[in-house]
Image (cartoon, rainbow, N blue to C red; front, side):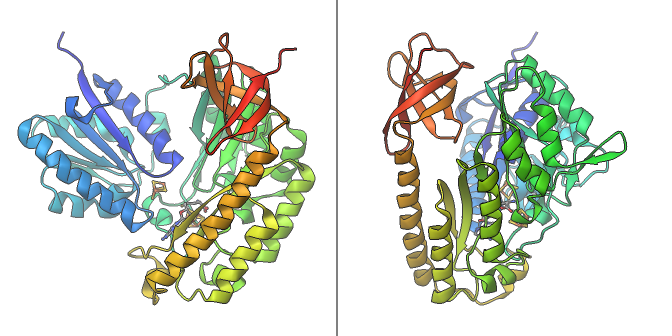
Length: 440
Ligand code: SAH
Ligand code: SF4
Ligand code: F3S
């Protein structure tokens, strides 16, 4: 038998891409490829790309540039581009980068085996269809990964069309996977030692899968997954405020396995900007929603995404964002400078001057950092539950996540990945917490 071929995958962007990369690795595994963590060793390099901001997309072309040199030295090297840039600019990539052998969109990667046949026969392959068949049903059934925490994509695509965003174009319309298949996949993961599941979707709380002709929302799906033996923790991301229905909010109060952490992007605190962004809710409605969520689960840690410098954003609009941040008190948040994306409605509008946007971003990030530190500091002295994921950097140490998704390091020479332990937090460091195991 010939030696297995080596595949290197580089993943950019969101967790959905992380999930897709794992599934692509499994699909390629069935074709005789094993993963390597060094591009230099690889027989095939796959870039799983992100199109969300200009910078993210540009990285792809600079990576292709570097790979060109590698391919010159090693002509048999195969280069593939997957993900959202592949979807948005597939033909352009083929034109600009003759070294790229294969371009595959996020909805077509179950067809990788056939595409590889073309590539091996010396042709270039491109598939950026949104096929009607269910990609997940055509992927290998056996999941190879068995870390204690795993992702599970339950919903894909987005119908919201926020004025700045490429996702509805790169990922297509909202589709929910059927309940039964998800429960089967979750049970399979639990049997492989997974104890924490994060349900993924571009708009995960718009989930509406069918079961026995009935439509299930995300709350119901989470409650059902909580019944699976071995699954101890559930999370989901990313949610849209308008899809937080009563049942999902209630689940945060009555489903003990649902963790008290919620990423609920708001983007801006100005009603004028929210309207221009096509977010379809006001700042006040968002704040009321946060109140209801905290009424169901008082210790909820909230996180968000923000865009500053959206076209037309005035100083007053930006101050409204700062006010909203002060009103909520976030545990963590991502903030971005608006990036005009080709084909989106907002890209037609006059931009805010770069230096104004830079200054706003700095002020917002400074406020968010203060809040993040405050929440980390508030954990000191508290008892949390930690799921160990891997050994820590220090001898005898384990690293894992708390209920609130904080990274926690615990000195525990007996500890092993997959243990779910009670821990008292003793110290808040820059990027993680330290704690000691409570032995009962
Ligand atoms: N589906 C998720 C987020 C998807 S993109 C949601 O609705 O929240 C992740 C984040 O990238 C967004 O929340 C937004 O803050 C940011 N983003 C998206 N498009 C952007 C753009 N054109 N410029 C800057 N940031 C952007
Ligand atoms: Fe993009 Fe808006 Fe959809 Fe989120 S909800 S993926 S920001 S269009
Ligand atoms: Fe990026 Fe596509 Fe995710 S654009 S954020 S990889 S859905």
